[in-house]
Length: 111
Image 1: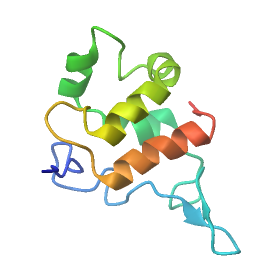
Image 2: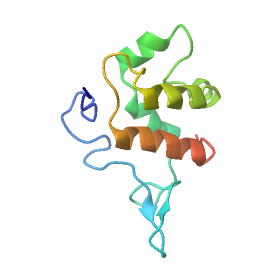
Image 3: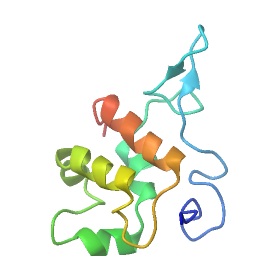
Image 4: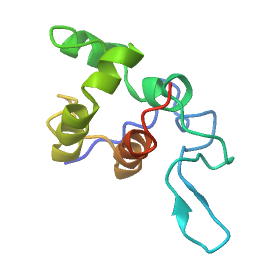
């Protein structure tokens, strides 16, 4: 069973009514480094808000999910845990959230 985790306490989408997905380029292919608005994905705007305080607390023994350096250094392991549903412990992320995290990695993990 998957849990819709897009609310983060507000009942709305992740970013004030928008989801961070790649925009289409001129040939119709998705540019994985950009948000819907064409901006480059960033940790502070697009990745950190995906994690809740209780996710941070649960993982504090290993790394800080609110810290760019910690998340960037452990990004591949985090992505694997997100894809497998092992993280977070109370229900898997929606596929588009996992995809946003992976796009951030593929873009070089911009701050």
